Image (cartoon, rainbow, N blue to C red; front, side, top):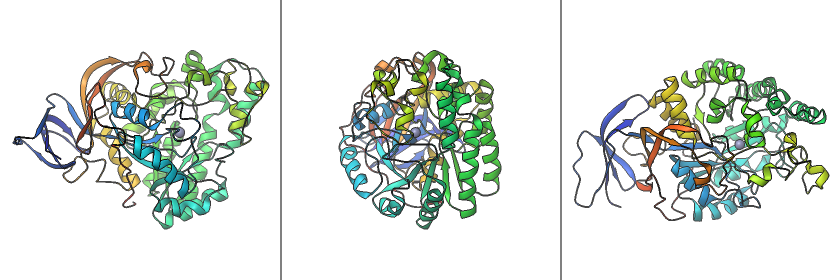
Length: 477
Ligand SMILES: [Zn+2]
């Protein structure tokens, strides 16, 4: 592989930004120098005026491939969409495609991903009551961590009840592994939603009242208590509430090995967007109040929140209207459903949760964080890359611009203005109804490199399907 020089960019390290040249040899960063001398066959990328950052490690993505839902998203499309958004490693969640609950399922998934992805990838396995004895074998098969749902999940992938969560934490601790939880109290969230549905509530913004902040808060307290007393590693997924942030800030200051993830949509949108976008903005935990959104930024800035995940998980437009029954499927009873069970079109309470967004998250953080709220580029690099790499035990191979690291980079024009259009997304589900549709962003990914290869040049994908490689955990902290 030939040499690449990224010239005159603003290199965003986690502690400072320097204007220098970045030299890449054989897919690795080989030097940071003030004036690199190009050889004859060397590729030179001019990055004058641009930010050169470590590629984003998306800690939370649902690609739904292989499996029956790969009409929503597949690895070829999701990884292209990721590359266009500056993401160089996708950490894929173990559902709702084939549930990744043992080493055979890991192998089955790998077979598809290795032939399709244009960016690197890591696989989350699942931790459920059905597979508590399979964590070790999934670790050996290459999983990066184990995800459990404290709220109700699916029949194939049931919620992790407390005893199994404790057992999972004990077992992963033995090999230095990581457990992640979707933290909401199952019964209280479920019964709250059913009550609003039964009462015929037509105000979608009240999804926030149906699964209120304390439903999330209670589950955060319970899971982190277990992790703390066991001294095990735990990630709290897509944390949305300031009360939770304050609690976790205190816990982390006392040395608990807790990592906190949030998603850009919880930092941009409040529950009012549900009135406008209805099921297309439905996600769990729900969108909160505007006051909560603004306060949550404080915990992004102060370091309480460690990582940013997209929670990319598209549904076809038709599915957001009367294609399923969230209560039945996610209370563990499964389908198929009669028309009556599916509910009427527009019955918000029964619609699916989730949406696609992995090509919007970096631009969202730059626009709303860097430009509007004084988030430093350096802190953004930690939030979107460095911290995730350390949490997963893949640092400094990933998440760093230091010599020796994989040359996974995103080059960003910090001032370029553009308008997000889901119809132009590389994602398999091209929708004009998503939360980011029509949003004006300032800051655009103009190039994405994975292991020194230019994967995305601002318009096109330049590497063949299957260029991406599995990233395995090397060490744990
Ligand atoms: Zn998710």
